[in-house]
Image (cartoon, rainbow, N blue to C red; front, side):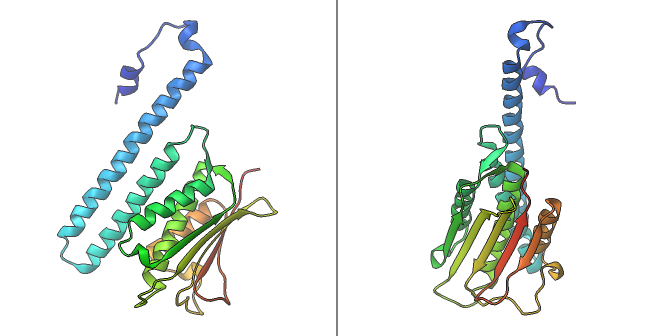
Length: 230
């Protein structure tokens, strides 16, 4: 069993008012949290790098593609974790700032990002970190899905929009849309077999939310509802 917390914070005499105070306990907890966050982030980046190396060595094209997608997802999770761990330790995240920063990081990873416009229209909201993290992962999957499928052979790119706000019922409503070729009429969220859509379904179900496809407009439009704590 690792002893690094004990080495960082040696035992002190019981009853020592200076070190038994609540403020010191909070400081120690925060230091431990930041150390754990740092190690988790580094581990995720290392795993992503290993997958990237394996992808370059893979002979089968399908295996290379699967490894590349998994590596990108892990890099994003590491970036999400880093952004969330920068906070003040309250576990509450400014969603507008968070998603705008995520947008910039996603586009920085896309070679031909200059062909597309990615708009972020998010109400000023503060949400729990677990909801911000899930929202970021959902947005990432939708954006990469649009970049991959919405504009086949289109040289001038298109517009992808993220809209997010709080409804009258107190829930968080997220919409991700594009102006591409759209979805097949028969497409249903629950019938999707791709890993990205399965990930979205899992995250939405975990948070007791809903996932729908809006019909009748140009391109694809996905709607997510996530309950927020009162």
